[in-house]
Length: 318
Length: 236
Image (tube, rainbow over all chains, first blue to last red; front, side, top):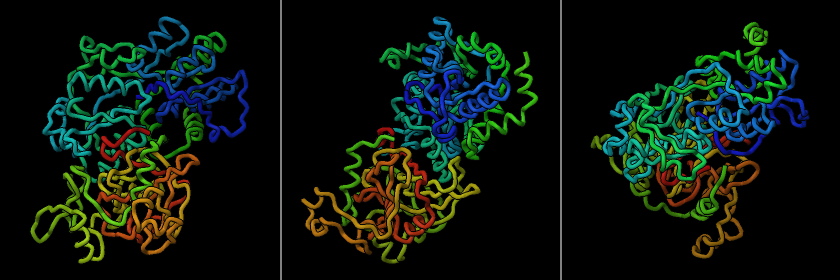
């Protein structure tokens, strides 16, 4: 869910690409987020573009805000997975106002919300309003302060701040301690909770491998109502206090983004990106392959491109 | 991973010769003496098959239990458990709340060891790695402990490895990148403290278990420390 803000470290994946790999000025730069489907897609695009257009492409890990800044400056050409509505503010700035970034038309439907382990659901925590019931949230208490704890996302994800807004708006910020941590730590915690039958609730999103690993229950909540969502600009230090969101997330989607400059410099590649039509099932499979099966992203991407050769050839046709 | 310096100092200085109080109100998974299910309660509890009740499992009862049975309650004994995870085999996952350390195995399983944790846990959560290991490690008490504890002062220059050494039979030194975090997974001279929150720092296993873990773990293995009570969690 992703849409990591901040996290400004520009890490070149030397381990994957090979230490000392020269970065040439005409290499395409693909930003890689820190969640698995985005990582897999970044490498699939790299391998497919190099195959179809003989154009070298470099994958670099970075947060989404840095990626958008790079798309504007020319240091990044492609972002494989931009989530909406999480990045509405950023899209407004870079796509609508400045016109320096293009969102590919094809979108992949997604979902985000709050989930529960089977033990939590069995104890009656099935609706988001249950998180405001101290009798129920005391079951989620892990530090003895009477309040439950829940993971709301990684510190670098902009969705994490929005989950904080939702907790304030629904009121469960008073009965739950909202915890931020890297996703790997949180997911290992879910594994341990399921293994011992502990009740836990946590922020979650789909497509995601956790739904294949465990019988995770999505908490019910009122359908999205745009009138009940008011998010201040995330550039305002007080944006969380100034915002409100008291219904479910809007239907989420994600899609590829690329720089306007790329469309001018490499129109065939831009046209190719417009035709990439990944499905939610494919995104789930990517997530599972990288996180559960521990496949290396580059190797996975090469195999994926080989399996989908005809389809990719079709994307590359004018 | 960022580690607060205060936490580092805390872990290093709190080696002690005695078990102290349980962390007030900290819920942990109860240990089952027989086949009782694990439940969450305000402190460690175990199921007494004779009275068919859950009873507090504190330092005193732990000593008594160990004296009678020469081992920890069943839940804290080394065992293979079902453990579905995305983490690769060879990964260590430490759940301080429930006093379990998981060593991930292929096929959706893990070896689960009972652990004793510091009174305040690790005070952080995150991902580190096994930087090095040692057999019968030397223990050097921190200066502040030497200053206040005559028993520790005897070993200011380092206590040789052995059965009385608080690090026990083996130590796994946890690193963040190439830097020693000062946190360790180690054995213990006080095996009855497994399952408890005791004043000693870091993560302790009984000597048989830490020897078993040491024989299996690879240098560089990933170690995930779970959030041990969100109030203690300050970020990674």
